[in-house]
Image 1 (cartoon, rainbow, N blue to C red):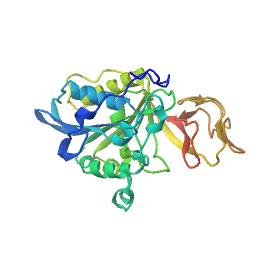
Image 2 (cartoon, rainbow, N blue to C red; image 1 turned 135 degrees about the vertical axis):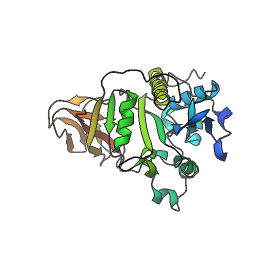
Image 3 (cartoon, helix red, strand yellow; image 1 turned 180 degrees about the vertical axis):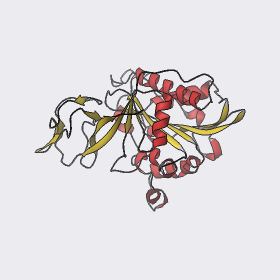
Length: 313
């Protein structure tokens, strides 16, 4: 235990070195085989190196020698280089090594001449994603927002989020201007049937409740696929939030009007929620919901997404 840790850090990163020997020669990717035929699934963790909850869950599954009741399950520690640089004293310093692993998932980037620690890892992982029927990507947030599923624009991803029954908030968004997420990589995109991905933000990076959420979502996912015995437990009503606007920082002087953490609903259209230099950022409609506000975002980065609740049958 590092007693000099940042006081925000209530959990410790597990030692994943015992899991290095990986499936198909890919380090830190384990494959668990069921006794019966079934889907191929992947649970991915530490896409960002300082998001610990997924690493804790995968470590638990591997240490207890979990085996799916059917199908095949990949457990993948993604950005290991960044994760291994995590320090409880400076927890914000290891999101990535060279660049954001979750912004490189286009064919142009993956097949292009670029080189970085994250690109090399993505290229190694890429073939496995073409084998996967279902991807659960476990994340956490810098803010103290309630957990939420991020489905992208795929209807099958939305269906999966609703089938799991939790978290209560489901967000449909088109992604980032900075680059494409793994969740939106080509096999998981597009209309109609096909492989399905779901990204779940389980809570603030370093809180025990975030690990509890990740554990619950993982169990729901495995039960939904028939890999873990038992029915998916009931959950409170879910709300579906559709992102309509993305606020991208322009100046080096972007400030929010309050200490927004996420999922706040702003009653009145035209309410000022931030200033970007001299330009006010106003809500475009009544009951506007703030999604994942990022305090301290740099020019070109996303500061916040704006969403409205949409009805679902």
